[in-house]
Image (tube, rainbow, N blue to C red; front, side, top):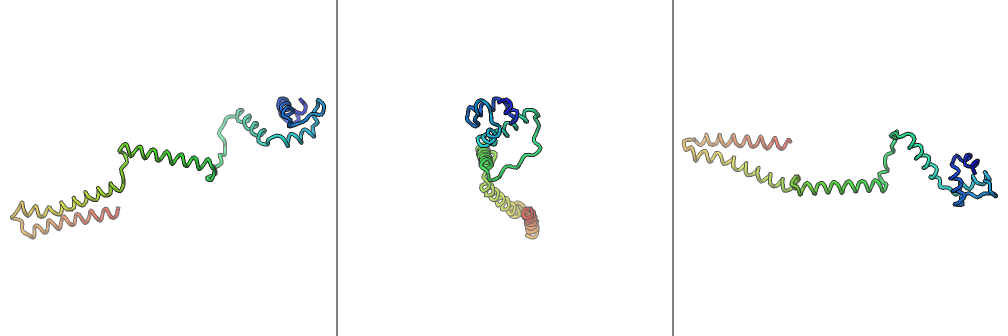
Length: 163
């Protein structure tokens, strides 16, 4: 068994375990190398030895891998990672909404439109207030004030349309 273990590049315990689990058979008390090799290949999982060699190599020299393959975007692990990320994002958004950090965009737009309309109405009413508070102003003066207010409102409207 010792010579066969050396031939296979494994430990004597590995050969003994293979005999006990009937992955290889003995001829008397000895190992027939050709027959044992064929049985070993047929009855041993191919990834077993490679995994053990990888673990052994990794323990000898701990260093970052030079190449990390991109995960398959269609794999179960990728789909689960995307799902978990989405669930975390939704939980964060729900928390921020309940904490008052986030507001409903449609409600904010409606409120903003209401405030802008009210400001416009009040500004357009300034000319009429001037006429009531200063009766000495001529209708031409009132129309000039009203024209200046409308010009400024137009400029604001154009500036917001561009942005």
